[in-house]
Image (cartoon, rainbow, N blue to C red; front, side, top):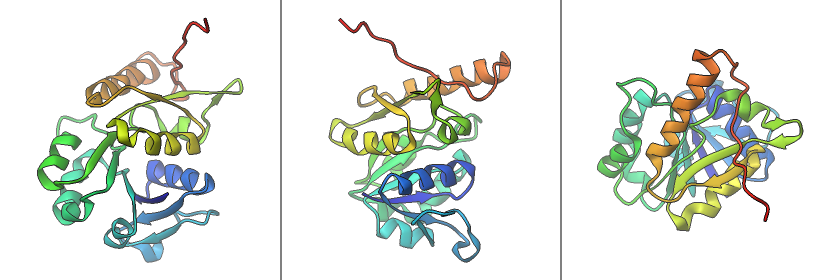
Length: 198
């Protein structure tokens, strides 16, 4: 899969390198590609955001939530017919709703909400006693497989919540912060869905 990761900070860098190690063709989109070390020791490359998007099938937004509208203003038309995976953090009230912004500024793009309900620590170390944590996500049914491939590449177990469940994913982020930060359990904390094997 050809994946553009927009954002070269800790979240974008960690996810993009994991995707590359998982066999995907990754290009980081950066404002300053010439000085970026986001690719690390992987086969990923770094280019301008425009070049990264143009060469992609899937675009992962790993920007601060407040930077999404600026990105969409500049590159929204290029996202048509591409799957946009929204991994942005929207904890602050100033951060826009990613789906609403995408519909408004990038008509024809497809939307998934993933990689936004856990902390960086889980992308760096997804295992608990040898068992991968779950990553809950929402997308249209036709895009489920693409998102699951990306989640698996990071080492997490994908759990599909269905289409239109972006708010549920965001609720898990609030739960994560309530436990990890407010209750002091630490940021290497994750969730696992348990089901009756029968």
